[in-house]
Amino acid sequence: MRKVAIIGSGPSGCFTAQGILKARPDWTVDVYDTLPVPYGLVRYGVAADHQGTKAITRQFERIFERQGARFFGNVTLGRDVTLEALRAAYDAVVLATGLSGDRDHGLGRAEGVIGAGQLTRALYDHPDAGRLPDVRGEVIVLGNGNVAVDVLRLLAKTEAELQDSDLGAEASAWLAGRPIDGLTILGRSPAAAARFDPVMIRELGRLQGVSIRVADLPEAGGDKLIEALDGLDGLATGPRPVTFRFGCRPAGIDTDAAGRIRALRVEGPRGPEVLACDTLITAIGFCCDGSLGRDALMAAAEDAEAGRIAAGLYAVGWFRRGPRGTIPENRAESLAVAQRIVEEVEAAPPRAGAGAGILPAGHEVVDWAGWKRLDAHELAAAIAGRCRTKITTRAGMLTLCREKEDAR
Image 1 (cartoon, rainbow, N blue to C red):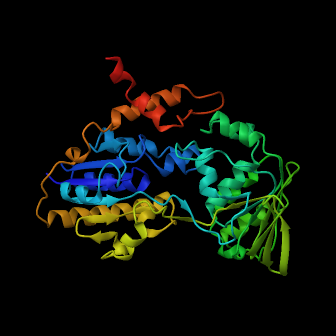
Image 2: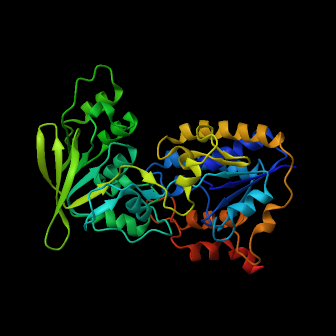
Image 3: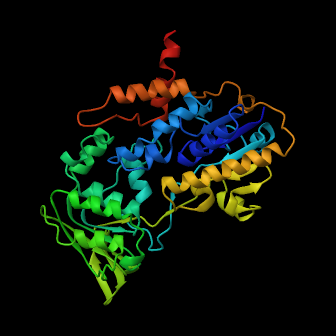
């Protein structure tokens, strides 16, 4: 029997497992994650108010409950097991850990300049996140992609509009208490080159309590994104101003005596401008946090475009292609890599070794049953108006994952 290890249980990792087991149901596929919980980006990256998108986890559950994949949570590559040990124990190893670092904006450091990843991890109760930052005053969201829209939408919503999300009590109170005077979403590109999903732009048209202005729009000419943006311009459901600006290249920041940002200097369509800014949230993409040496691995890959790093070693998702692509796009790529893995593994001699034996003696691994105990607890503990209450610490997660075992 052939054995495959997948490092990372987010969408790309799960889709790869799905593809391999559909083609070869008798293979062993072990999915490892550094967290005690599965689903990665879906749990901690997809916006808390987009529960329809998060529902894809029902499909992923079938991979473990019907197709036979095994889950090994609370296992960190490089700390609990080495890549070399995995490659020796499995016929193929797939890196699907994504990208978690905020890309450098090049504007310098200042109080009030916050990465979108830093902010959303804290909002979505990631156990490794820092405290929720101080967001106030005139807020500029720098970026022309869907993460920027997510941040803008959550900051603009009223408490009533956050019903049925999975925001925790602390994040909910934080959002309700933000003293925000205005929200501007600003991008370097012209509107026609923005990477917004038109569906997400149209969703902003349902916001309550905002007045939206979209500047510097060209004629739509059948362009769905321009049409969606044009449909927002002039929307007035309340007092909070929301502005879209395009073609504005950031040139620098100005700070006050305490070191907090007070203005963003840009080169705009009509020349240099100074925009009042008390908080700058950068949503310009993600990069490797340096923990797995991703950049060096992909630079030396034998066929990076096809996801093959070396014989028996593969990459999928954002780890392979960088921070771009929706969940459906990553699904197609992951299934293609899965097919290549099946073909190449069958053409190579089997590897010796057993995946479970490579972890340190006594290391606490969370299996699928442990995750389901935690999942049931979070659903049952949901506060009013929310669909679940996430456990926010690794220690708390591990305690609940083993709860019933300890009771026996």
